[in-house]
Image (cartoon, rainbow, N blue to C red; front, side, top):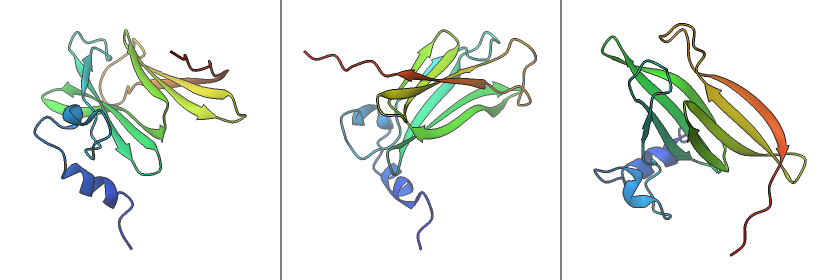
Length: 135
């Protein structure tokens, strides 16, 4: 029996020096390009990173530096339609039931406190999905 993410570990070996950047159009590297925004309200950019996982899942993580240590402040894995960074929020759209609806989760930092005890928190809602634009 293989480990749960054995396939992902094998695909990471396909990544070049620039990670998923060279692979945005269907290559094997599961690591997506990192984005940098001040999500934690400390005046410094934090890193948001995504990685494709088996079964159409996307792992999204956000990290910050606190006292010279890398600290995870957000972590989620879900079937994902899109990820958007808007201001200091990470917005994730996921498919939902009933058909024609999507689940929208907004991850934000509360202005109180800082450090691993104050991670980004999420707020979600189910909405009717907008039709795809056709060109």
